[in-house]
Image 1 (cartoon, helix red, strand yellow):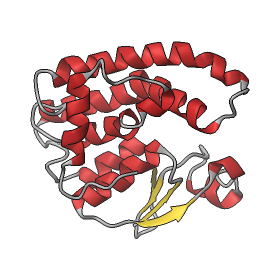
Image 2 (cartoon, rainbow, N blue to C red):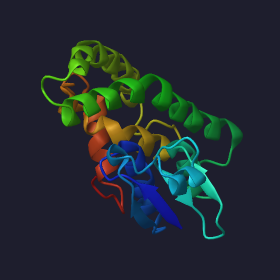
Image 3 (tube, rainbow, N blue to C red):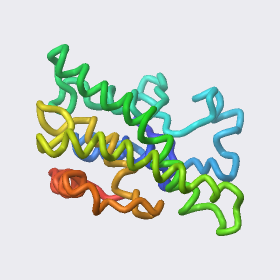
Image 4 (cartoon, rainbow, N blue to C red):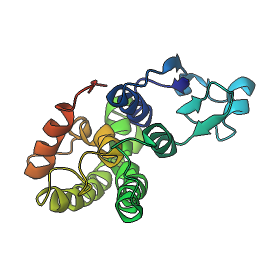
Length: 197
């Protein structure tokens, strides 16, 4: 399988991390969205939404959206429970990541890490950091009760939320107020097959 992505992207890192943890190697194809490479006719034929990552299967079918890719890669493994409620709880965290975590943590990281110091979007950082802390507080509550986000153990929920949480300090988001999240980050890093971004 081929993974079209950008190394600096946390969403692309999710797929790389999952493939490594599952022992399912992917052929990496670097696509630099900052240079317009996701807007070329060839890329838009793969994903009309013009975003990475995109997983290209051996039979030519393609799948976009990082958390959909996680679900596909993890199907049939311990990273995605087969029992309906346990599976839904993992999906609940994937939806949380996309709607309550990524729009704040990832966007703050992007602004702080990639935009110049005088960029107007830096004015958004205080609000983004505050909303990021609200999302981290939800994770802290859950992780103070169990080792991983899903009660069934390490799953793609942890992979999805690790991708940007581990880099939150780059965005000026202090993790010292979230000791359970900090300990969880170390447990994720200790998983066999873990690779750093």
